[in-house]
Amino acid sequence: MKGGNISFLLLPTLCCNCRCDYCLQRHDEGEWSTRQSRFILESIFEFAKDAGFESLRLDWQGGEPLLLADEYWNYVLPLAGDLAASYGLILTQAMQSNLILYRSSLKALIHAHLRGMIGSSFELSHSRKIAGGGNFTEEWIKAYNRASDDQITAGILSLINGEVIAAGAQNTLVRLHDEFSIRKIRFLLPCASAQTGRGLMIDAAEAGRFLSDAYLMWSQMGRDEWILIKPFASIEKFFLGDTGVEQICFFAPDCTRSTLTILPDGGVTLCGNYACDPSKRYGNIFETKLADLYRGDKRREIAAAILSMRSEDCESCRYLVVCNGGCPARSDYDKDTRKSRYHYCESYKMLFRTIERNLLTGSSRTSGTSSPVR
Image 1 (cartoon, rainbow, N blue to C red):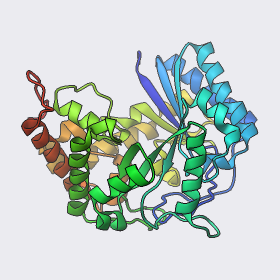
Image 2: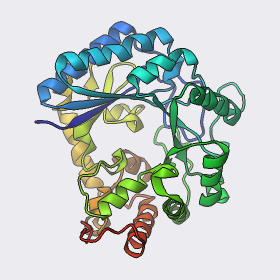
Image 3: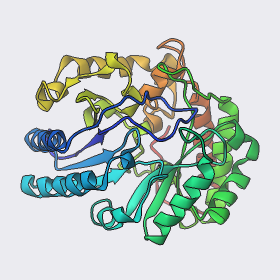
Image 4: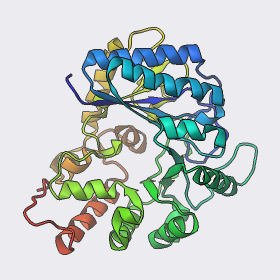
């Protein structure tokens, strides 16, 4: 492979200070030592350079990454930057946290190595819970304000569950914008979990109406200048003919080529959705070279299985060029059989139709552009 980008989801721990209803993961004990982290990072950069990638992204996740001490982050984040420079690779680093444990002692490090940003999770519901008790919303707001005072931008993943549906898109967005000063959102639809059985599945049509209503309000209020809501802008650009626009991983054409996840025990798999599913592991980075795992039979097996997940409805759908069949991991968990339709397929088709109509009838449509959707 020559050029291009590869992303690594790094899970140095699965321990977490929260016990959220929707969570797909088991919170097993264990974490990377600094020695193990150096070995993993060196392996990643060696692999990326040898494979011909020009850039890579490291997404530090968990569990809860901020359970790890400041000393750990003061070691691994600069180390990754130094390795990128020595290998001549373009590096982006990011972190996804529930934010509860944010502390100002990490301010300089986040500004220097995470572009002054941290990802978090929040919605106006009771699905997120602190282990051992405590009010998640109250503690999250305190942490969000601490980060804001440190000029840290916190974008959120926001789950659309029954409470959020009942509140409605307009009320939800107004409260997130006006009451909580949130400016970056990516909405998620809940999925069932093969591991935990604690999924919070919602009606697909209700989810589609919520997404469509949220999109129309976002469009009317000024789009990303009001709130940046992924993936609304990138879908609009795609419909306007920019087929090279970067989409969220959910709509990636082949995530098995561009994403790897490394777990606390060194296990390597496709993504965090498979973190607690041993049957989806490629192998272990402490036992096998990363290049061999990437070229190995298990990754090819999963890639072939992803293609087989597409039902006949997918292959005949005019929106397949937009969604590429959706997230394979969530499709795997959400479907009763591999050949059945993804539970939220109609939700996204409702959103796509709304975006198309809005662009065709509104002032956003640029003359001379041609949509790739037929």
